[in-house]
Amino acid sequence: MVAEDDEVNLGKGQSDKIKMFTVPALYARDVRVFPNALVKSGGEGTVVVCNEAGVDVELPCDCIVNAADMVVNLELRDALANEGFDLYAVGDCADPWDIQSAITAANLAARHC
Figure 1 (tube, rainbow, N blue to C red):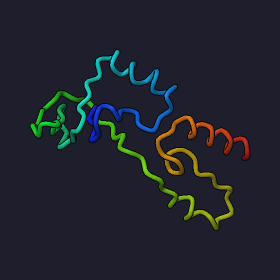
Figure 2 (figure 1 turned 60 degrees about the vertical axis):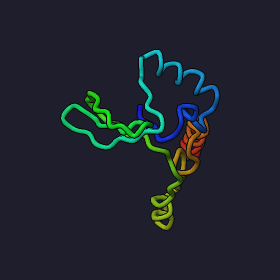
Figure 3 (figure 1 turned 90 degrees about the vertical axis):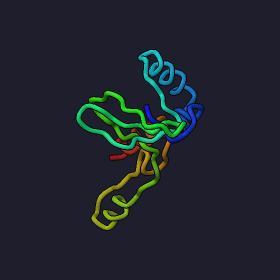
Figure 4 (figure 1 turned 90 degrees about the horizontal axis):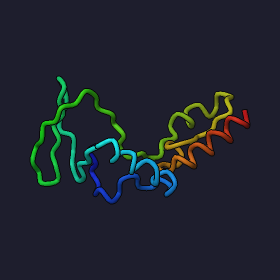
């Protein structure tokens, strides 16, 4: 896992209940965390990471998942506002960082439909 932030911020913004299970699960699966690092390139079974010391490290890799920090983005909702739809912004587009709130908002929106 490559993170631009310090390792202390792993799971930032998530509820303590979620972090209590997910962070230990990552480490139990031998997930290696590269804090203060960046992905420089990837392809052909490898990824190049610039670590916190500024050293490029090439690692074996069979897939890359972009889980970058989330930001509010209501463009789609706003673009469809005059189309006659009931629209609900849920999850990261409305309130980034908190999976518990995202699930609650989605549940309430689904019940309203």
